[in-house]
Length: 206
Image (tube, rainbow, N blue to C red; front, side, top):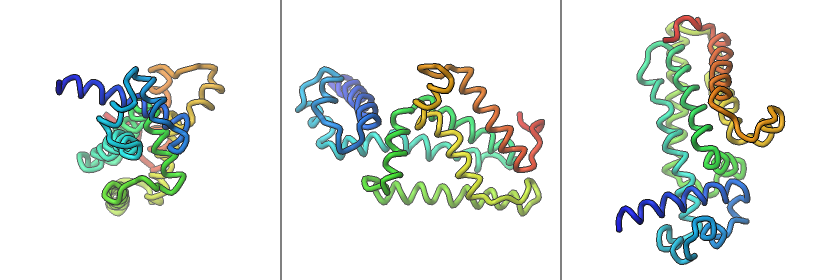
């Protein structure tokens, strides 16, 4: 029974990511999610209690990888390596969690009304620590003096756009879905631009 519950919960969460991404919180209906996974509507409430709780679970599904993405800032002393790993992870998140990423972006654009304080605090703490780390590298002469916060803003925008604005990217590229090579190209280009802008040597990347 526990395995069945786990499978159903995953299916419901995946369908919910799509519904919330396409329609937003207000317009999404539990009955539509139930139809997507071929389960009775009461089953959705059985697993997730409420629409709001289900929505928060969707947000948490993207929050966890976003929080883990900054690990290279603690693992590496070389800013070139840390930034490359961070960009690679951010691109992978956009590739693997496109719908949840859209839900998160929409939540932020509307002032994060459903984002709990503990999650908001974790995200803020992460940003503060990453900013401090960049400023440390600058003070140690390991990279050019730049505005650490705006560097992070630029990386977020350039990596998350592959999930949040996939419709526009699809129109420009003429593809319904980007392939592995597209993501590798994006990763390489963003990394190159960021490192060069920070005065870092691409040859130092391993």
